[in-house]
Image (cartoon, rainbow, N blue to C red; front, side, top):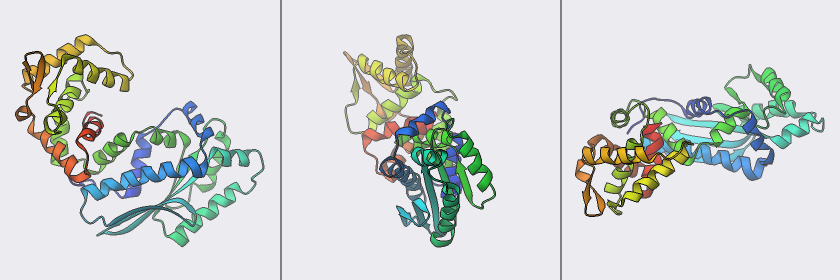
Length: 307
C-alpha cells in the first residue's frame, strides 16, 4: 500500500480526533491521570504510532521523533523529501484545571497564550494541538473560556475532553488501522481487500481473516471445532455482544463451502491455496512494511478491513 490521501501529520491527527469521541461522563477518567507520569508518555506514544504509518507507507520519511521543548509537551517531528514538519501538543491535566478553577492558579490562560507563542516562535511548529485532559462536565465553564479566548489563534486546534478521551480508547491496532485507512484510502490493494467484505461485518468475515493468518503465519493450520467457538467468543466480547452458537455453526459451513477449510477426521485443515488473492496481498504487505509478527497481523487486519 502507498499513501494516496496526502494529509499532513497534523491533518491526520485532526481527522482521528474528529472521528474519536467518548461520552462526557467518561471524561472523569482524567481525574486520576497525572501530567508527566501518565498523559505525556501516553500521547507521545500515540503520536509516534501515527507517524510510524508515514514511515511504513511513504518513501522519504527519514526520521520521526517525540520530545519536549519550549511551549510544547510533545513535539512530533516528521522529515520527508517534502521538508520537515513539526506538530506540537500542549496537555492540560485535570489537576491543572482544578488549580485554575479554585483560584490558586490565576495565570492559567495567560500561561496558555505564552506557551502557544513559544511553540510557534521558538520551536517553529506547523500546527499546535491544545489537549484538554479534564472532566468535561466539572470544568465546562473553564473549557468555554479557553475556546473563547483562543479561538482566533492561527494553526491552533483546541481539543475537547470527549475527543481526547475517545483517542485514548483506541487500541494500538485500532489507531494504526484508522491511520492507514486515512492515508491509503484509495490504494488499490486496500480498496480491493475492503470491498471483499460486506458493509456490516459478519462472523464469517472474522473467521476468514483468522484462517488467512493461520494459512500463512507459520503456525498450526488445523483447528478443532471448539477453536471456532473461541474465535467467535472473543469477537462478540470485543463488540459487546453475546455468543450465538447458531451463527458459529453457520459461519463454519460458510468456510467449508468457500473452500477455506476441509474436514479431515476430527479436525479442520486450512487450505492456503484457496485464500482470496486480495486478502493475501494485504496480509503480506502489512508484514513486509510494518515488520509485524505473524501473530499480530490478525489484530491489525480486523479493524483495518472490517470497521
